[in-house]
Image 1 (cartoon, rainbow, N blue to C red):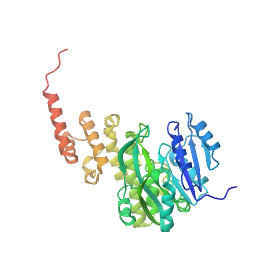
Image 2 (cartoon, one colour):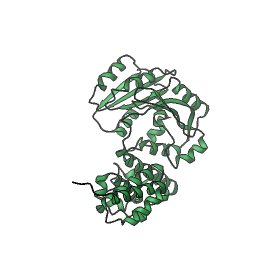
Image 3 (cartoon, one colour):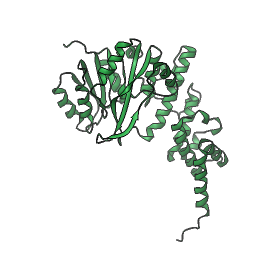
Image 4 (tube, rainbow, N blue to C red):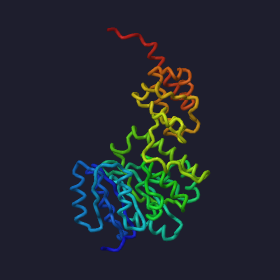
Amino acid sequence: MRPPPRVSVLMPVRDGERFVTPAVRSILAQSLTDLELIVIDDGSRDNTPAIIAALADADARMRVVRGPAQGLVAALNCGLAQARGEWIARLDADDVALPHRLARQMGDIGKDREIVLLGGWAEQIDASGALLGKRLAPEPEAARLAVVLERKNPMIHSTVLFMASIARRLGGYRPAFEAAEDYDLWLRMAELGKVANVPEIVVQYRVHDRNVSTNNEIRQLFSTRLAQRAARLRRTTGVDPCDRLADPPDWNRAESRSAFYAEDAQIARFLACANTIDAGNSRDRETDLARIPLAQFNHRERKIAQYAIVNLLQQKDASNPPHRLWRTLFRLHPARAAVLALQMLGKRLSPARPA
C-alpha cells in the first residue's frame, strides 16, 4: 500500500455528469502531487459512475466509493472515514480548483501550525466555465474572521482544508444541521484552533441551475441559527444539546415550540409562509409575528420574510390581522412596502373586466 498522502480531497457527487470531469481533473492536476482524491458517488442515476470510474482508472491517486443515495452529510462522513491524509480538502463536483490551490494553502499551514481550518477566495463561473466577473473574498485575517464566524459562515466550502484528526475528534459533519452542516463543523473547529482564509483566488465556484434551491434556503437559514445557538450554549454551559439530535429538527412538530431552539423554529415557520402552500396552512402554525425578532433578521431572512407577508396578506390570514402584517412589512423594507401598497390599491380601483 502507498504511504498516506499529505492531503485527502473529498468530492461527493450525485448525478454530476455535466461538471464532474473538470472538477476531478483540476485536483489531479494540482502542483502539489502528494494527494489522494476520494469521490463519493451518492446514488447517481446518470452517467456519473462510468465517468468517474474511467477517471480513476487513469490515475491511481483517485478512489471511488459508491453507495445508495443518503445525502451530503453521510457522503462527507463516508469520505472522512476513508481518508488517509493528515489534511482534508474539499471540492464540490461542479467547481474547479486552480492548479496552485493546495500548494498555496499547505504553504500557509506550514508557517502557522495553530491553523486547524483554512479556506480561500473564489471567482464565479457559469455553466460553460466562463468567468462571471464576481469574486468571493471572505475575511482572511484570523482574529477578525473569528468574530465574523459567530454571525455568519465566512468559509467557502469548496476552498476549505482542515485537520482530519480534529474533524474526527468532533464527530465529523452532523446530520441535524442540514444545508449548514459545514458551518456547524467550522464553529466547533474554531473552538480548538485557528481559522483563516488565504487572500487569493484558489477555486472557481460554478453558478448554475442546480445550486441550492430557494426551497432549501429556509432550512439552511434555520440550521445556521441552530448552529449559532449550539455554539453559544457550548460557551456558556459547556454542553451542546444538539448532540442529542440525530436528524434535522421539524419546526412544524408540537415539541419544537418548547425545545431549546423554539425561537428558531418559530422564525422558520414564519419564513416558510413564503411558500404559498405553507401560507395557506398558517392557521395551524399559530405564527405570532409580535414575538418574531425581526430586528435580528439578516438580509436573506428579511427578503424571504417579505414574500411570506405578501402571501399571508393574499390569504387573508385570520391569525395575523392585516394591520399587523402591513406594519411588519414596512419595518422590513419601507420602500418595497410602499410599492406593494400602491399595486394592491391599484388592483382594487381597477374597473372589472367585462365577461
